[in-house]
Amino acid sequence: MKILFFTGKGGVGKSTMAAAAAWQLSRKSRVLIVSLDPAHNLGDIFGVDLKDNKSQYTSTLFLKEIDLQKLSREYLQREINVLSGTYKYLQTLNLDNYFSVLRYSPGIEEYALLTSIEKTIKNETDFDYIIFDTPPTGLTLRFLALPKVTITWIDRLIQIRQKILEKRYTIHRIRGPLSNEETVLNYKEADDDILKRLWKLNSNYQALNKILQGENCSVILVFNPDVLSLKESERLIEGLNDLNLPLRLLINNKVTEDNKEMADHVEGNMRKKAKDVPIDRVFLSKALLDGKDGKLYDIQEDITSKLL
Ligand SMILES: Nc1ncnc2c1ncn2[C@@H]1O[C@H](COP(=O)(O)OP(=O)(O)O)[C@@H](O)[C@H]1O
Ligand SMILES: [Mg+2]
Image 1 (spheres, protein in one colour):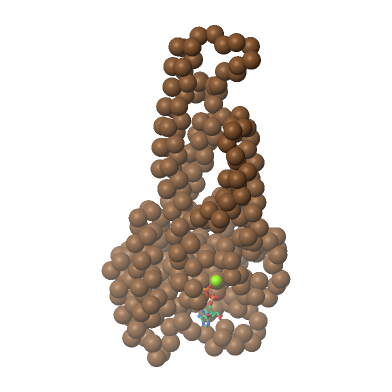
Image 2 (spheres, rainbow, N blue to C red):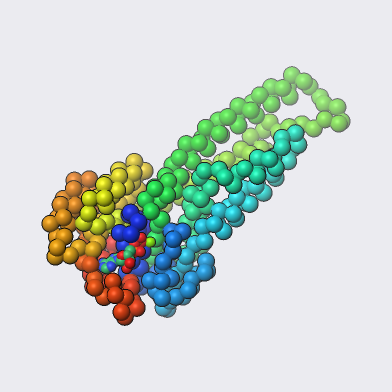
């Protein structure tokens, strides 16, 4: 299975190019396209009403729009359940107080998105391609960075937890036998639920990171022949490099006879930033602008041949 992420600044044509790629690939393969952008327009592009459920468009093409708010709520509830289960022995801490502010904590949306991507990759194994249409650059880079950031944190937390268990063991040894009313707190690593959960999280994120950095994952960057789009794309390329994520195709979208010079200039700069990455050009299409035949995903140019 191959995984494609379409990224870029808002309005450059990410959703349109993701939809076009999905349409083109679905001629020979089974394709699922998932919109992660809270400002969805995948349904509009295909002329159907999508509601958080996978919907079949043709025999080989399926569409889905993620409801980010619902996803964040569910993510938070799952975390609260796990936390209250794990820390039920800590009656003295007022956990409810903590939970009530947790929903305002930064990062919830990013984790919810990442969890949804992880689930989709795990569950939708009968597709040849899963295409993700991503939110604008900032949020995308943040959720793509999460596995790496999280692994760093979890490693540290594992060390801290191991120290706590060591201390518990020392106390246990010094104190000797307990009276009947007292309970023994775990000091063995293999019995400790918190450590087990940290190890599990660690291996999940390692696995996800491997998939995202792997051969079967491709990040496609869409841009336009203009300076703002160039600047943001340059930042995105740097971000992807920092995260070791595989940028495989650049799409210069909305090129016209009038902006060809600018198109060359922007491509020249992109080439310096991403040396071996191929560039496709897509021309501004009047049919697409007018939306006359309703197929807002059907572009002239073949943008998938470099991705096969
Ligand atoms: N090659 C193109 N020719 C004409 N219009 C285009 C082209 N690519 C995108 N558009 C139009 O530009 C607008 C923004 O495209 P969209 O795919 O929604 O961008 P994004 O997902 O990056 O925000 C839409 O109205 C879309 O129809
Ligand atoms: Mg979009």
